[in-house]
Length: 308
Image (cartoon, rainbow, N blue to C red; front, side, top):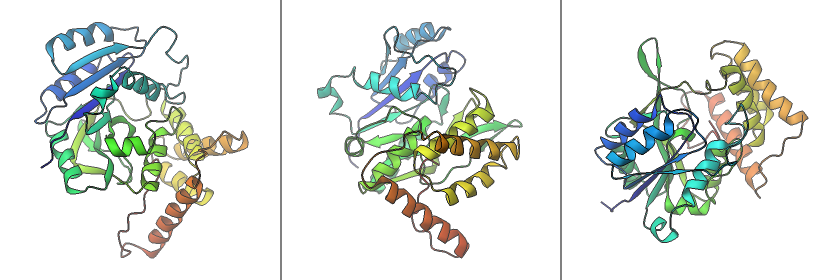
């Protein structure tokens, strides 16, 4: 088995309620990361004090803070891509010679607690498939006292817990600092011949429901806008809106998603401008629609769902 060196970067802002259990989950991994860098992006709660206390206890943990004025002024940090910006800031604080020693690097949110065998299971999948460029686990959220997996296409790796090979990360140009970044990187990776996949064998507990930080309906509007940016076609978007409509609050969720997409279209929000990107995305989506129309007996061709 090849020797791996693992770098994990966690951008945080006001995660005092969750960051300690995230740290404990990493410290107790059967396969710990060699280097865990936490980037505090302008927290004004107890997060900085907790981080520095933990860093004194955990030898693999390091903490940096973004400079004054860096933190995006917005009540919707996902829309302004605050986390990717902080991620990139942290990445650039690492000496390039040291950075080149890592075989895998990943992003982990400050409210995600990993099961103890998370990295061991995930790295085993990278070993099994040399073409795997972006991998991640399944995200569980608490509902009615039970931890249940969240719905996502198997080819989509949630932005909260992405792990890249060094080669894939270099090929795609790293993490984009814009809404929809966690769909852009996957499509770009597949355009370069890499595979992307989430694995049920690696579980993570999300201590805050997806899209809930700034309001659930606002999250669905943002999601629709992100899919406009990602060049999702109108037929695919209509099917997606019907699926989103089953998320609480039912009906309204689908309408909010579709509104976000159409508002972005009318406003001509800039879309991904990479040669061949739009054609690649649409081909993937039409193949997947065709596979669904053929029914459950259709072969399981890897027809990804960009951006989930």
